[in-house]
Image (tube, rainbow, N blue to C red; front, side):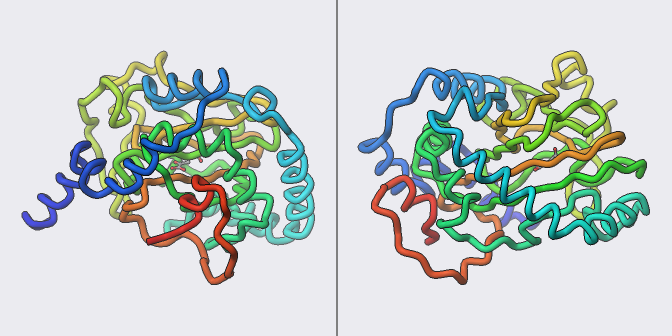
Length: 299
Ligand SMILES: O=C(O)CCC(=O)C(=O)O
């Protein structure tokens, strides 16, 4: 990185410039127009702020579980439709290829279409979820991605997101992982080093190596920063929801004995520099609800 780029990067990741410079409009809009939390959302927010991760469930957080039930039915159909391709992907996952994240089969494709009518968008745009995203950021956020990930059990060496890393999409990042089946140790649970997010108390950086342009590290480099007994492993049941600020140190998906099937979505600030992750070719009316309108609109 040259000096100009370094200064621009540092400015973007200095909380006051990120919030009151780059994201002033959505911060001010949110200040005058934010919603009130239910008790579970308040608990999630408090844990997210402190640890960078919080685990809840559809039943605890959402007043109506019918969207989750609808999503389960759609995912079951996708699984059946892609049965042959999943079998091929399973073979590839065991071949340790260097070029692709072969251990995850993305049921909505590599670049999913942003469609507010789809159950995947409607799930992310529920008031309780938008409330958590917007309150965590202290501004109106944008929905930047959703997909259904089928993580394939394999015996290949840990690589890419199976190794510790930080995501780079923004200064704060919020990802959700919603489980369609129980996740045990053998299904490669998402694992988080609490307190390593931007709001967290831990400022020391682990010693990293670079894999395909991304800094990653093995467990032994993480242990001196956050001891292993403090790591939060997102083991869980069908219907559990993991909220994580993936700017903090995390890894996951090293499934060894069983597959993992989950829905994921990503929220960032409006000015995140991440390249477009949706296919936005589908036209749709902007919702009347302000937080949904913000979440769906780019620029
Ligand atoms: O598959 C996992 O549990 C890890 C995912 C991950 O690293 C990410 O979404 O940034």
